[in-house]
Amino acid sequence: MAMSNETLPNPGRPLDLTGKVAVVTGSGRGLGLAYATALAAAGAAVVVNDLDADVAAAAAAALTAAGGRAVAVAAAVGTAEAAQALVDGAVDAFGRIDVMVTNAGILRDKVLWKMTDEDFDAVVTTHLRGTFTCARAAAVRMREQGDGGRLIVVGSPAGQRGNFGQTNYAAAKAGIAAMVRTWSMELGRAGITVNAVVPIAATAMTETIPAFAPYVEAMRRGAPLPDFLRKGEGFGTAEDCAALIPFLASDAARGVTGQCIGIGGDKLALWSHPQEVAVAYADGGWSPEAIAATWTTGVGREPQSVGIPAPAVPGGAQ
Image 1 (cartoon, rainbow, N blue to C red):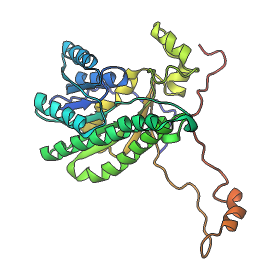
Image 2 (image 1 turned 90 degrees about the horizontal axis):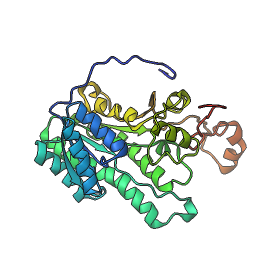
Image 3 (image 1 turned 120 degrees about the vertical axis):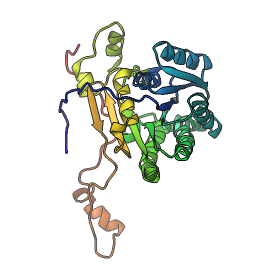
Image 4 (image 1 turned 90 degrees about the vertical axis):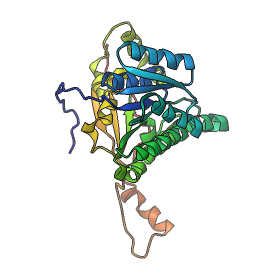
């Protein structure tokens, strides 16, 4: 059932994650820190992770000072050893792990003919392999504990639709979406749900987009983002995106799994899974000539679009 443009009330009923333990990769700053803060505010104990030990320690200290429970584990996400260190950090500090949020990421943007092997491998290692190793380590421990768990991975519109100059990033994020669907089937019997968050927020990764830049700068000076961004583009703050994480970590989402869920600004959305949108049949099978003769009037009549739509900035918007 379509729910686009529907505005729903906030029930104002807080979700209680007391007793839950979460790991959030790449949570020293930005979206990851917002995710960790939201989980801590809901009562979860949090393992903060960052490549920079000082950044991770400062974030954990801030969560603790605000009344939460947090420890820091510095590690470069990607290897099995780093993933195990994060799970061990949760178990050593808090006795268990209930939630793994795989947020850590980097960018190495270049068009195809200029992208090096190193550019490709660095992004795929952090995003795709990092998600795999962290999810695997968490799933092993959760299955041993025997009372379920939550894998919350981070996708991107680029992984859903592609994006110019982001071969490595888009491929990794598309792979993450595919892993979500696979893992939701594999881990269902263990009571472990698996979902992807597809966030859109004012971060270091998005603030360089020319259409967004002046509004992000104005926001930093205290001005609110306009409705055409918050609603039309689903673009807001990191804190706007963070609301989805405690929900998916909670008992309220026990039946939600295998989904890619978008959030940003005032917008919450469910992304579709890839599926056939047009089919045709030929008795005895297809020849190249038959495909060519019918393509434009048959299955190819309405080709699918690609890329992230450009922001629709209204004339004179402030």
